[in-house]
Amino acid sequence: MIGVEIMISFMIVPFYAQIWLFDSTTKNIPEMGEELGRVVANENVVMIFTQPDTDGDVEVSIGSVGDDTSGTLIYQGEMSFLSGVARVGSIAAGDLYDIKLTQNIGVHVEIYASPLELPNKIDILFSSRDLIESIEKVLL
Image (cartoon, rainbow, N blue to C red):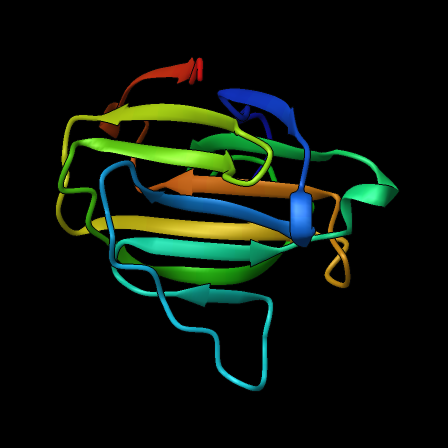
């Protein structure tokens, strides 16, 4: 996809080699099975496995489907953000961003990782740029 730009990028400390995308008020955390893939997900949460924090921060980019990405698709699905806010980042590190959405149910999300093994770059793409009202750093 040439000429379309990611909206915003930021660096996240990936404690426990994880970056999360989740409804800011959910308590519906997916269970990890014995075999872990690249993500663990349910309708409210996607936990993305990344490089360890000892290898450095992970670049996370937010955009819309069709934006440039050099990554490999690791998740595609419909998510519900009942609070109207998608939160992304590292819960353990307290390194989080809030994405205020104009739609909260049936939000199409695609997640790309680069490199595929132990990624240090994650692109989170929503179905439309119009869904994203604002993006703010969470101050804890």
